[in-house]
Image (tube, rainbow, N blue to C red; front, top):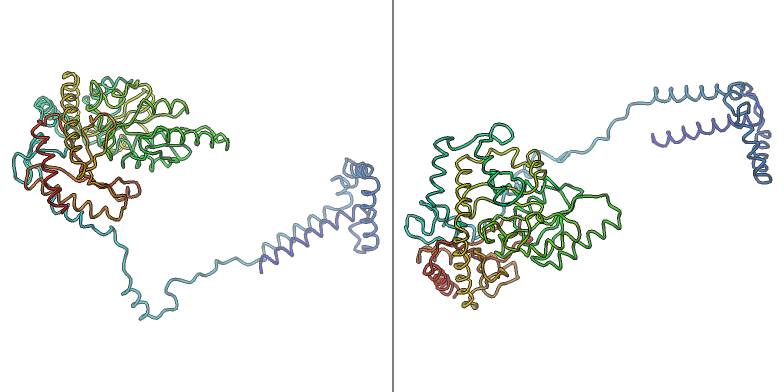
Length: 546
């Protein structure tokens, strides 16, 4: 109703203004209330006739009307007292706003309004809140009830559930540095001097001199300009990607990337594309489509990244970095490589997948890695150009807001890096030999197991062992996981060998790989250890799969 009245009011205002102008065209005095309608019609008719017969003349006469001295020029308008019309309209508008009532919001009906008290109580009794977590599967129950407890050093053998001498094929202590005496001594000496923690973030009051020493050591080890240290490895990559990518940028990731990379992409809010795992052809097609689409839409310049893992957590295979570098250079993308599992493991001097694939460090724009695997410490780091590193000191959330790495762990990391450099690949050679032997023995049991190939002659020490044949029906994966957990338990209880079932977050459900036993081989394992581990897997699988 109010909108209808407003429209009528506007129409009358427009008619009033139009009538005023027609009065001036006809030369009438607006102070006279006796307006001849026939004269008004004649004026309008003459106007349209002139426009039809002599358009140019009408334009000239129009200009004569509005030019200085013309009838429609402000001086002429005031002379004919036309300002009285405008003043009258303004008075009408002011009166309209003063007299209109205040608008009130429409009353909305509340939930439960109109119900009796008994009906409300009945609804309350029937209501059930949504659970905070999903239903716990049988695999999860079995795993939680039988989680092994370690009460010794991490090493070739450990004390598990009170039993000594259990062979470790579970931890990522690839080079056996977790119980290396030189590493322990370095940590003890630093603990005596600095205590156990810094209790402050790096940017405020948590920077200790050993942190700066470690960053320098890491940059020299990775052959980059500079490095930045993060105190928590799981937050390293999720801090790095959002520091450089935002909503207008593009990130292309390998479909086999683990949760850390995907979490970083989600936090960045960038547009994310995936390519088939280790398929360089599909990567090139994806990049070509992105570039062509942005050129077609004439999008503004943005940042574009390719993100891969040097050695993949979820599959245990190695990224073909040489081919990836060629493709990313062709389409002018930046490359981020997560070297968490490949650091200390791949390459002639343990510098990771880039060294293993003969890729120049300058061709990798951002190198990220965890210190919690082969280096046997905690935390992570990012290495690259000085400008890239300095940007993270203000933009890397895991760096800015987390308490810095305990000083003694910085010292143990430097000691571990020194050992890796000094042994000239001896430990890495032993690790490669053990990994190849484990994979070769599993190849003889193809009827039982399907092992993910690393594409590099079996040198990856991370091995995902799946039951053959591998089912693509995800509805059977829960029962398969439960069977694998029973196999792992039997290996521990009967053969004193520690394995683990690969575990994934429910957030990874849409892209998680098939269930597997995740086996990690160490440089400290003997041939007898490898044979015993494979024999235990074969025996327990045959027994429990019947």
